[in-house]
Amino acid sequence: MTTLDQKPARAEGRKDPWSQMLEKVGKNQDRQAYHALFEHFGPQIKYYAMANGLASHAEELVQEVFVSIWRRSCLYDWRKAAASTWIFTIARNQRIDMLRKMKRTSAEMPVETEDLWQIPGENEDEPVTSLHRLMSERRVRESLSHLPEEQITVIAKVYMESKSHQMVADELNIPLGTVKSRVRLALNKLKVILQDQNV
Amino acid sequence: MTRHHPDTLTLMEYSAGNLSEPHALCIRLHLDQCSHCRSRVDTLDSLGAVMMESQPQVGVSSDMFDSILSRIDSEPDMTEQYISSQAKRKSPLQKLLGDNLNDLPWKRQLGDVSVLDISERFPGQSEQVVLQKLAAGGKAPAHTHRGDETTIVLQGAFADQKGVFNQWDFVVLNQEDEHKPVAVGCEDCITLSVLSAPVKLTGTFTRLLNPFIR
Image (cartoon, rainbow over all chains, first blue to last red; front, top):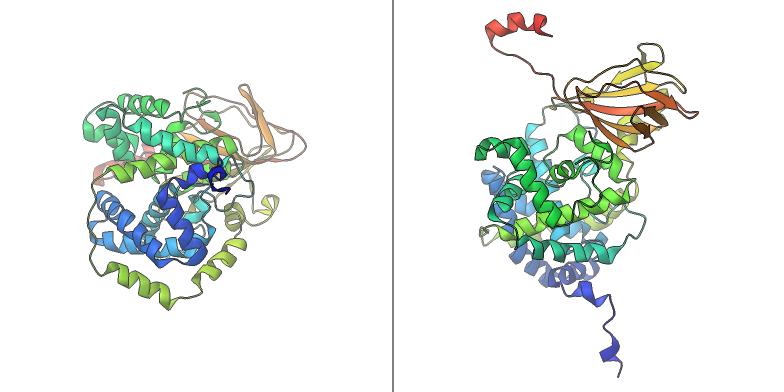
């Protein structure tokens, strides 16, 4: 039989079970897979909402994120982003959207959240080096476990609490330059800083 | 300062969703055309995902999944609607400014320079958002910048003593950057700039003083 030979490079990405499940949701409207994603990511998103000061709207945000996941799952392409990355960007956009709607007066907003913050893999014509993307998520996860606590704390405040570098500096009572250098050290290890100019 | 591409710290604030709307627009317009920066943002988005998974988790109420399912069932064709709405999607720039940048109600300023303030398109944002047009071959007078000024080239190209900036190039300038841009090529050069909010003093006494401080 040929089964032994069916492990080409493609199989690399399939190792991630969440991406497989998300794909099932997109292709077959698989509700079991959808439920598994909900069980795994729902509590993460709820914490994300609470850390962002949306405590009284945390469950609402989880709901909005999952409805959005269902609607756009047909556009999900595992070669373009791991499920967790894709879901993070949806949670981020829904959070921004919710805050925008809360602040909205009667003035219309000509630009939608998704015009400003993109979901990876959507609106892209070129099939970019997809393997690189999947590798990058694995690399990020591995490198993060080796980072010193002080660097992780700073990054967590930026991502989880939507704090600017300046706000993080004020809160931790350290100079802005220190915050920036911690972030840079961390991103260096994560190889995000590749060809940065003048940084 | 930052030239041609946004720096990684700014991209991180973008990925975390912490930038103001006009600022995010500049980044988005650049990302649409720059695969190098897009792949940096991909990695940063992965960092966001890994941060989210490494934080504490909070249980959700037991009936939430059912209410999500009933919402999905009440709008059965949403997926299709979603796909067609995506297909019809206009670029953010078209939505904001229409199809022809040259036809906008430009206000002639000095010599070769025209401007258009579009701050009111971003309700609730404190930054000033300005389009600037430098006529083909034209020169802008030497100037510096108040605070940080983030600029993206929307059309044509300009050059200053530090280099040439083509369409979709990104540049951040501040008080220390005095420059004298020249529009190069045969097209008018149009840029979108976001100016960090000027310091506003509040309080009854300082309000009286305010006009003299500017």
